[in-house]
Length: 429
Image: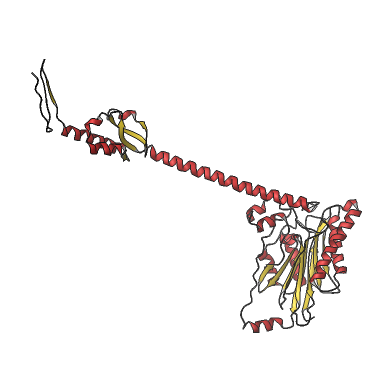
């Protein structure tokens, strides 16, 4: 192998718990490194994590990604077998993350292969940037990735401690795996959630940047996690790439010194576990039960979104109707009330009611109007103020009065009618 690695590690039970259920692996046979975070049962977490790293160390005899995945699957069966044979350990399980330097065939470059089950993490520090390679396997992280909840909602979610994958729970386990091409200066960090719960990405990156020795980095990260609360066991394994066989130089020459970028998105850090002497993370005894809980949580989220939408729609509709009603009650119309012209208060296109205070104004008969005036009134003319409506009816009355002058003279047998309009005057004897 042309790639050279240097490793450092540190582990601590934390400031709250008395038992350290974390385990770590620095293999002496091949470049294989792992971190496991156990949980469940009376000291079962300690046993489960120890079985995981021990099985992985013995099973992975060849530095290949296939052998690494097979080793994780074997560790899952070993933990289940041990739990079934000892009632005190029933229900125990563990997370596991690991990396191995893969042996490159002729013409194939050496790579770092990695695997992950659970919420322990694998980071890559490259070009002054901290990248999370693994994904957390817990309920809240999955809901965040699907966009069902925000970071703020995840921080207070009542099911944030539910693990969706762990070794020892089901007969078969789904293992995340991938590879990355290592370059001189790269630094890999494997850690339990006791670190990622206490320190954010910027704090971890600052330590990786500041200290040169991987052992010093691991020690300092554990120290900081304890200073920030130390509510869980914390374990760190730091692996530095000290030589890549001049791969970085060849790549730089091929790219004409263009800067190399890696596109990754670091998932948000999960909320720390609650204080207590025991690990409060949970997992279902069967995966069917676990994913039924996940589906129920998603269903509740969708239900709340529908309810919120309906309530918002009703509120907007009520406000709109209220605004229209408010405007309509302040709109005045001139129309007919029986044979008289009246002022109405209401909405366009309909006469809702007669304002009693205006009945004295509604004294003009239909017959006293011209065709144009009747058409104007029948058009339900609208006014923005009561004074404008009064002025309109007053003008109608004045116009009618100007047009018509009637004089009536009555005698026992004779009556005479005079008008300014062109008419004939009858005489009766």
